[in-house]
Length: 194
Image 1 (cartoon, rainbow, N blue to C red):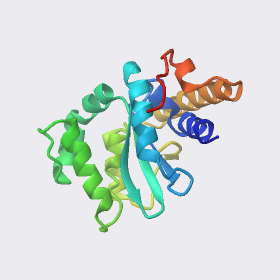
Image 2: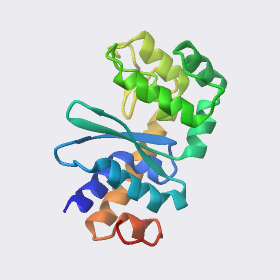
Image 3: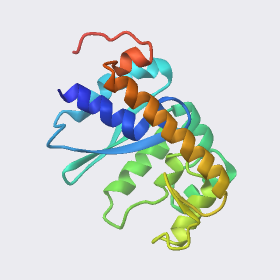
């Protein structure tokens, strides 16, 4: 069933954002497997926004959808940090215009064919110093640890974060395997599909 597959994919790839350990996660899904994904994402946003989670299509790139699963309050706070603002300004983002404007600019950057916008790491809650490290070392050859992202600075802090992220993934995925749905996991009542 498409719903079960979608929920399993969300739990596997986006558990840290779903449970609030991270401000955002991104997931890429086949447009052939999910032709109505914008509608599905909207339905899940209506379901989960009562728990502080939004799901938005960032782009349909080639044959895939790129979804952002995020907690708006956490994401906005992360993007307002001094280092994040500085890095986003250097990349042309309208840093004083609010989260919606930043996401619109990111969508445009994803559609430009001038290379992938690696500053997306800021939108995923990566430490700004690691995003800057990757921008200076695009192949990642000088990173000190490779896990949920390429780490250039606080290796031990990142290891602890990665372990928490992995535990959140296992917890959500095991509950879904046991037959629960995301609405049950988050204690929200589903409304009939429109």
